[in-house]
Length: 175
Image (cartoon, rainbow, N blue to C red):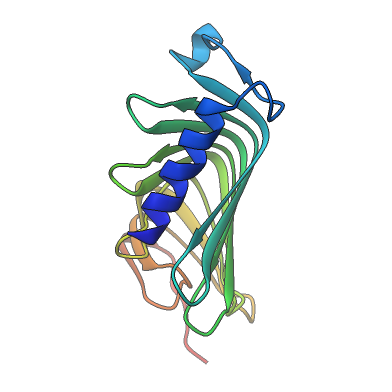
């Protein structure tokens, strides 16, 4: 709840004082649809009362205040678990649905977990409420020690500790 309020207040403040803050109000380029605000070097942070939960950085954010949708270019999301271990998600593009509290990441998506596992795909959904990742797209997962797994229809936790791939191709041997 605190995270949603923080992001709403951030967007509200930006909307009210865009000229003074160095932002510009635009109709948006045609490929980005109806945009209220474009922000270069966008930064957002999700917090609760005790700690930072995630940080989001994007080269450019196209914000639609009416829909609560933020289109992102060159996304870098850092998620911190309860032990403050960091998972990094990088993608070329993303769509943040503030009301639904999900982020859809597309195009060269890479996930680097604190346990050394790496996930590569072209489409990934992060659900903030459940802290889960999922995709129907093909995935490739690399494990420490050199094993890998290709597949499709992935569901995983944010740290890639619990991974389910419905249509695996290949085999991972536990050492």
